[in-house]
Image (cartoon, rainbow, N blue to C red; front, side):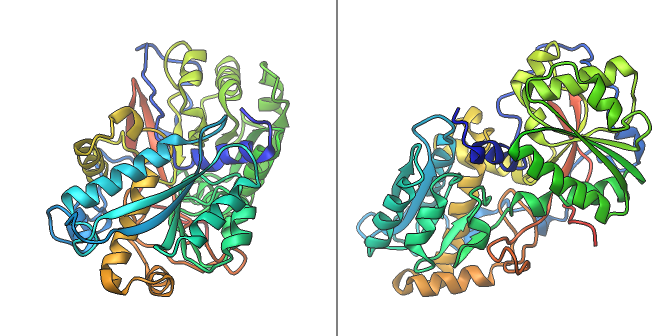
Length: 437
C-alpha cells in the first residue's frame, strides 16, 4: 500500500462507512478484549431496527421518482461522470462495481431516467495526484456529462477540483480527499471524518453517561487527525479526556493503555488499525479492564480477528452507514436484494465503498428524474443537489448541505453505533446520532 499520508487518512474516513469487509468468524470462543463491550453500560440496545419507515430507503422506484420497468434503449443516454481511485495499491474497485450495479438497476428495474438509459463515463486515478487533472479534463470536456459522481477519490482530488472548479456538480458519498469538503459545487451525503467523529462524544455522554474517556491512538498522521477529532467531540460533550499515542510498530500496548487511564476511564476509544487493535484488546485483557470500548470500524477487519484467535473484540463500533450485515435493517435488506438482482455479489456488497457507489448513483437518479430528462444541465442538477435533504440510501434520514461554513460540501455529520456480539453478528444500539450540541 502507498505510504502517502492521504492513504492512512483515507483508511480512517473509509472505516467510518465500512461494513465488516468480508469478516468470517472462525471461532466461537471469546477473543481477548471481548469483555470490554459497553453493551451493559446503558439500556440502549435494540433487537431490531427501530427507525421510522420514512427514514429507511427501501422502495427504490418511489425514491428516485420512476416507474418500474426497463429503460428504452432507443433513446439517447443520460451520462454521468465517474471518478475513483483503483487499479493500483490502495484502490477501491468495489466503489465502481457498486456504481455500475446501480446503473444496471436503474436501467433494468427503474425505467432509466425518464425512459432514457443511464450510463457512466468512467475515469480512474491509479497512483498519482496529477491523474485527477486528466479525469477533470476528460469529464469537463464531455458535453454529454452534466454531473460527476465520485467513489473514493482520496488521491487526485486537488488536481481534479482545480480543473472542474465547480463548473459541473460533483456528488460523493464520503469526502475522503482532503480538498473535497471545501470544493465548489460539491456535495458529500455521508460527510467527512472531522464532523462524523463528533458523534463519539454524543454516544459516550448520552448513552454511556460517561464523564471520562481514554483515547489510545497510533502516532501516524491519519490517526493523529482522527484522534484529535474524537477528542474534540468528547470534550464538546463535557467529558474529561486523556489521549495517548503509541508507535505503529509496537505490539505490547500495556504502557499506552495504562498511561491513557483506561483502568479508571468511563469509556475507552481506540483509534488504530490491524495490529494496533489487537494490541489494545490484548492489553485490556491482560490488565483485567472491563470498561466500555467504542471503536472505529478499522478494528472490524479480518486481520484483527485472526490476531485475536478467530473473532473480533466484542466492542461497540461507530459507523456512518447502515451496515449491510445488519440483518435487522430494512434498508440493508433492500440493498442486498436489489444489488444481487443485477449481479453484485454479497462479498463485494459488504466491502467499504460498494454501497456508497450504489447510494451515490441512486441519489443522482432521484435528482435527474426531478429535473426531467430533456432539461438536464449542470445548473439544473446543481439546483436539485442544493435542495437535497435526504433521506440517503443506506444513510441518514436527513442531511443539510452547506451546514458548516468551513466545509460547505459536507452535507452530513451523523453516525450509528453497533454492538458486536461475536460470530459475525452485530446489534444496532442507536439510531443516527449527531455531534454534541
